[in-house]
Image (tube, rainbow, N blue to C red):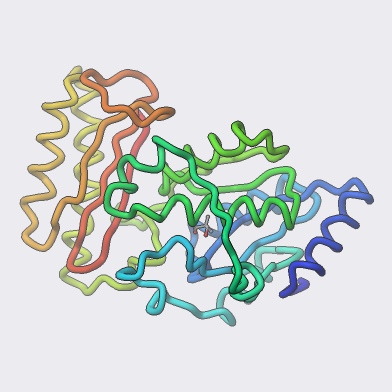
Amino acid sequence: MKIIKTIEEMKERSGRLKRERKSIGLAPTMGALHEGHLSLVRKSVQSMDKTVASLFVNPAQFAPNEDFDSYPRDYDRDLDMFMREGVDIVFMPERNTVYPAEYKTYVEVHDLQEKLCGLTRPIFFRGVCTVVLKLFNIINPDTAFFGQKDAQQGIIIKRMVKDLNLDVRIKILPIVRDKDGLALSSRNAYLKNTQRQAALSLSRSLREAKIMVEKGEIRTEIITAQIKDIIEYCPEAKIDYVKIVDAENLDPLDIVRAGTLIALAVYVGKTRLIDNIIL
Ligand code: PAF
């Protein structure tokens, strides 16, 4: 496994792979790896000639009051995990080469970026889109793999790729959950024991919503109320949002239909957790 730290070397390497007609898969990550990340890497290793994993905690997607400084970092462990999965190249650029002092350009996907998570994290998606577009330009992947847990991120990146005519296929892979149902997230590491019980209310409420729909309830108002009841029953959980929306334009729906997205964000203590299902 090759570790590349400079943009020039990464471009040179991906250019060479393209000339050799090798397909390139990209698994973008901020490290603190878990099985969710590894599912992206595995899919790429299985289906592409070469797999590049990026490892970069992207400052542009954190607001000043968020956890950029304390975001879990253990690069040795991450590199070891990438190696075991058969990653060919890890791209680990330095912050000041991705965003030099004179940096001025950001990508925004209007309308979609302001909804759901965008309400409490107003700069998040412009930071994500900017770094993802940079990674696409530097690595030139044929396919990039993202997780369904960040449903809005996947929807926005697909829109960016379409709108900017980028030649990269976006694959969204299913949420990976712990045995107890908690969606895997690097931020789960922040949860204390009692908080984990509260965190389970997210997946429990989504399971309950699915059962309601299977039994014939399609009114989103009723389903939303039930989800909120389940979460609010846990004193440590504080709802940021519960939304039932169209999975392409993120507009709220009155009635559930096939492909509808139920997305939630909940604070457990100071940790903000997200989860979702597509019906
Ligand atoms: O999903 C993430 O881990 C990040 O948002 C991403 C896509 C690696 C961009 O920094």
